[in-house]
Image 1 (cartoon, rainbow, N blue to C red):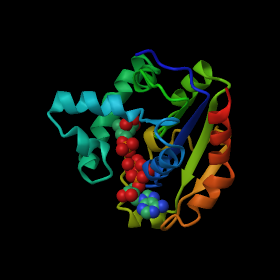
Image 2: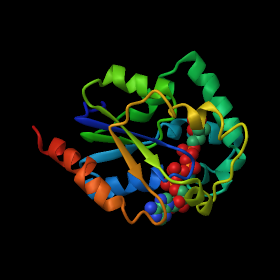
Image 3: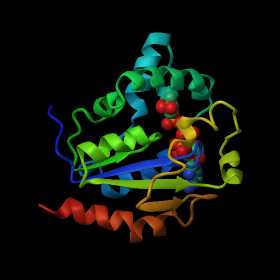
Image 4: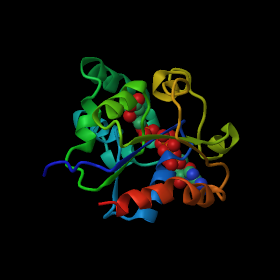
Length: 194
Ligand SMILES: Nc1ncnc2c1ncn2[C@@H]1O[C@H](COP(=O)(O)OP(=O)(O)OP(=O)(O)O)[C@@H](O)[C@H]1O
Ligand SMILES: C[C@@](O)(CCOP(=O)(O)O)CC(=O)O
């Protein structure tokens, strides 16, 4: 099926365990699956990596510990692909998207954002999800040299003017309010436009 031209692309980034998946799942629920879809740039990467290495794709896609054993190697594997073709995973991840709003849950590098800015200049918006180190630790994060200080985690620490910064500390009790007044109302307006 051909990819539908989107009206809005919400590009999320954030550190490990900041809650990118949690926040994007919440937005997906609020807008509904007819209006929006979640696009994971790591989806096609993990799919191919799981196939090549005989791994459990469901576990690689989920929030648990399993994927952490393979993270460093997956990053390396993905970077080899990106060196040849920086838009490789972006193109695969959006393929066949039918909804008018795309929620990209895991932008990590300037090259990811540049690809969307180039292909969809008027629709792309950047959002940072932030949580304190204390909160991230409570969610299972532990600093790992070679991962938390590398491009995969730090590539968007500078050089991006975020359209929204979402604070997702603790149980995220301020989440609903932050989303309702900004991003969700704009997304709902876009979805109504013809
Ligand atoms: N506001 C919240 N309330 C309760 N639990 C949360 C909240 N935000 C995140 N979590 C939980 O914290 C864990 C990490 O969140 P999530 O998987 O969304 O982070 P992530 O940024 O996608 O992490 P990673 O990139 O490391 O996979 C998950 O178990 C998730 O359910
Ligand atoms: C390999 C990688 O895609 C893993 C992402 O996993 P997750 O979004 O943290 O579940 C990170 C990367 O692309 O550098």
